[in-house]
Image (cartoon, rainbow, N blue to C red; front, side):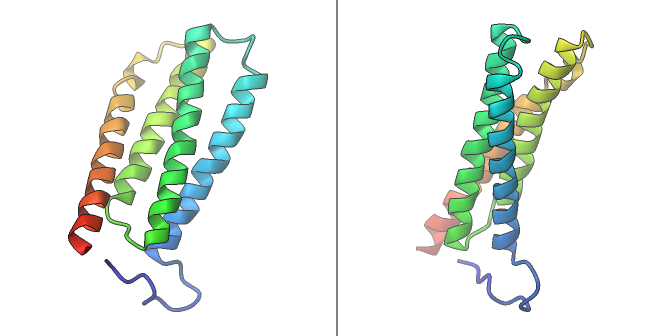
Length: 134
């Protein structure tokens, strides 16, 4: 595994930078989940609300996973996970929000599966790195 303790004291290590991203995903997941459950419950169609909840849940799950991965000190693939999570969740939030405002944004739709593929690829890379280090 890569050593993450080689940076000077006041610099973020790669693992701690991913932990910060993970913490941001957790915060956004909590806030968006609460917003969806309370403010949007009557304002959105059930399908749109379900999509919004899915995006919130992925922020939470990926945040937890990235936090756990950072604790191993192995960060390989975590950049892809972070980028994928951002594309996946934010594209869903944008599609739901713009759709609720009557704005056609179907061009954002392809970003969601691209984000999903990046998340999967990042986790595959992380597992490979852990496997090779054993």
